[in-house]
Image (cartoon, rainbow, N blue to C red; front, side):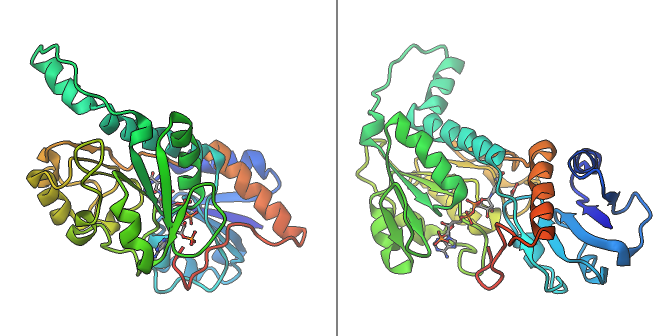
Length: 313
Ligand code: NDP
Ligand code: OXD
């Protein structure tokens, strides 16, 4: 039985080697490198595979996505009707927790202002609100956001979340479009960990930004997005940063990646840009999870973390 790794944007050798370590009884092949018979492929491990590739695998049983977000995969109109399993991995949550906390604290502790002061050799203490005076709203309260919330709560921030459906959570939750305005109105720092779906595309626009709290301890709202670039109306975010409607932002994801060198966002005031590196999947931990899922599946147990195609995540 063959496992196919198809991830043209990733260094595939570490993925194939990690899989061989955790699933030594299988044949692991890499698309574009190894010869393989398409009909022998039973499992595919993919990250943005070429469109149409999976449709040509007649005996494919399960598609494992090597990341948490499946928007690119679901965009393939020929995607076969097989279970798509997304990556849910403690290592990824830990990394996302680090990135989100870094960005929230960067804005909360005025690191960009202090950096500018340092460049100008200025010794000037700034007034600093307590974490407990700052309200962080988590837009999307899934696996990653819930982990980030635990860290932010330990620091002392006041937290609330926004989801599509009612669910148990350790922070107050607002649910659906009807509660969005109330969620935004009490948010000083908006942390976005939404998937990109038909309902969330372009959601971070001028209308949403205008709904954020303006009476907060930081003197203006902050946007932190590690979800997907497709959530962003980047012209609206740029205008808000320039006008001061947004006091600051941190973006890890963009409509076009890599962000083109001439994109005006590079020069936007009070904006931190990182190159979609908030929580990169690691072969060592992810391959172990995938191998365990295969073993469970073959033992007749249901697969975990299966994407609901109808809702898009
Ligand atoms: P989950 O599926 O666990 O959580 C998604 C959350 O978004 C859920 O709370 C869900 O609501 C909510 N949601 C989805 N659609 C809507 C909607 N229309 N309105 C309101 N809430 C909505 O995902 P993860 O936490 O694992 O990952 C989130 C995203 O983070 C990924 O999809 C990916 O795009 C991004 N990501 C980015 C990385 C990076 O390095 N920048 C790394 C990894 C992930 P409900 O609870 O009701 O289902
Ligand atoms: C993911 C990502 O979705 O890295 O896992 O963006």
